[in-house]
Length: 177
Image (cartoon, rainbow, N blue to C red):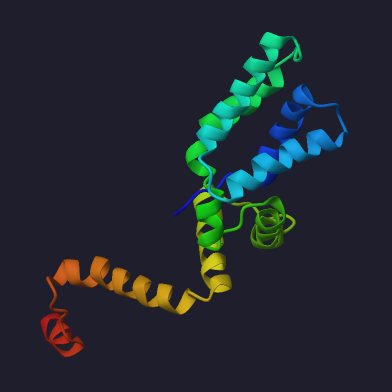
């Protein structure tokens, strides 16, 4: 399973950092954010992007053109902490969703509609089991899952007890008589 940080959440860190370099609402700020997002979508290493953002703030700080860099540091810290989950180029090539709309829509469809039933009480294990089954149905993998499940139940409840040989019903009845 590949985990991907939601691109929209990253952009929420990039905008305040952009305002350390450019006026809020300016074309310069927009272009600054777009450049970093485009680099990440094209496969740039998130740690290198974060390092570049910090370097730019340091250089501008020396010239006195940037006074507050707390948003830059917060953005870089966020990116460095989650860099392994921000491989957007790889995720796009694999066909994985990288933005909120698809992810939250799937959550709403999968979770709210099926677990948000009035008066229902769910244990964590029960909710997880229902969600996994629902995901298998929606992805078209239910038939393959069910064959696997049946084989596992057989192995756990019959093969393990009878060491591969399940007694026939007739021989079991002879023992009872």
